[in-house]
Length: 119
Image (tube, rainbow, N blue to C red):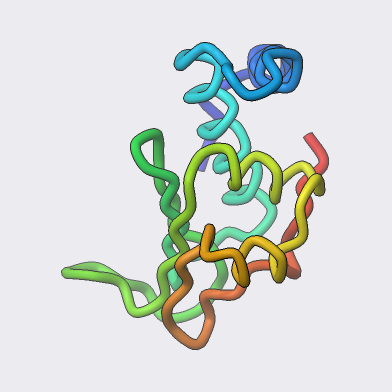
């Protein structure tokens, strides 16, 4: 998957989200989420796990059986703030999961070994 958000734009959006301390601009939040999803797809290309961060984006990652129709068998879904915290290493997967901020289904849905990302 070719990167659509430049490194500079992604890092600027992440900096703006962090500086906003809980009330980021919607555009910065969307760009940050999409940028980090693109980094995850680059780090773990594949189609066996779908990572969803509504309403801003979703990617299929991790090598394995390709999913083409219906609900994928391996799905991770979380909110934008949690996704950014996980991707940047500000929060641990286990903590977010136990707090109910990550919904993960399927035998391959734990992508914690791929996090944090280093943008």
